[in-house]
Image 1 (cartoon, rainbow over the protein chains, first blue to last red):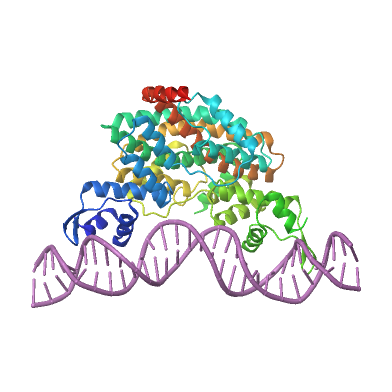
Image 2 (image 1 turned 90 degrees about the vertical axis):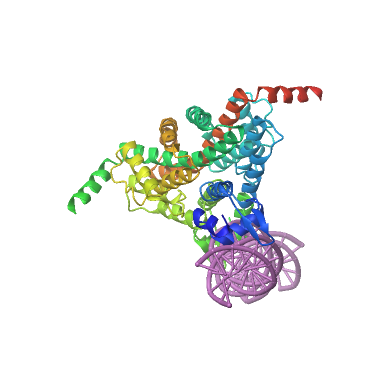
Length: 222
Length: 222
DNA sequence: TACTATCGGAAAGGTACACTATCCAAATGC
DNA sequence: GCATTTGGATAGTGTACCTTTCCGATAGTA
């Protein structure tokens, strides 16, 4: 197919596709003449992945580029590759971190489980955690870290389901990597949404009785 | 204190504080003369909250404004207020959604638990879920929705800890609301970070043996 | 009472990002 | 034959989030 059909099938405007081509988010099509190129299903698939990373994952163009090049890299082991894509799709804050929080974050990671070959100091995850703890501290929530135990417990269940899901559907190594990217990005958003629901439900259960009754009454009036 | 000290204590540049004042993210100080104002601890606290919402929560200025005005609103019940701040701090995607995914999302919410007074159709949470399912579908992950069961299970644990945490430390109604905002925003980031760790650990356990051994060997060489 | 630093407030400027628009000669498709 | 579409390059747009600059007034210090 040519760029017009790629655009129609993906819902992405032609100029935007050209922009993505320029930015290296999409491999060039096969040139059939100096100014004609053909694209195939793999381009469509890649384009949809790009849009998912941008729209749902809210990644920047350059993060998407990093993630894709990690996906496409072929000279690494699967484990290393997964680490690289994880780094690419994890937003690392650029805020200055206080030492106390950095130490707390690293201690948490160390205690969480020995991760061989995991470079704690320069991982986005540890900086993220440090930023969270640092922000919590500055807001007077210095006990926030104690909550992390529950997070670990919850994430154990979810991560297990994630891996299970990836293993069930993936048919090749590249498939595993791509599924992990998709599952991670979509899962992040899904987790957040489900947590909001759980909060709303808990709020309704504990304190919303009168409000719910009022709402039900309003509903009844119609 | 005057603006200079507020800046020094918060780490936010003076011009940025002025900008936040203009944007209504920070209440004006008490004017002691036509061009002198005093700020107190509440301003410092609010300023730190704003920075946490922006830096950790990655909220836009206008979302922060919405969240703050929901926090400050006084004429609503706690339950309604919590719903409003939740809406303000939940990023709702602006992508077009396919009907199938919208239906699946709404069915999920309905089945998840009866939320009285919860307007499914115009909640950011349901749009978020629909966007996730829609993106999954377009990427060929049409079974992604089946994973949500595990997410619910994980979130039950986490949401319970969240509520517990808020109830334990809050001393007033306003405190509950603010703690909920902070806990939600920081918790989102924390969840994501912990999930990354869990994935890394699982990857190391299942496939990283050889890579870990290689890394350990490299470590040993030093 | 000089003098310097800092202040509040307004307006204009800047930077980064993610596209969009315009143009061109060449190729396609009816 | 001829309107449409193409790849490719360059320039422009819109939004978001600050910064810079300026002003006359005030605060703190000598």
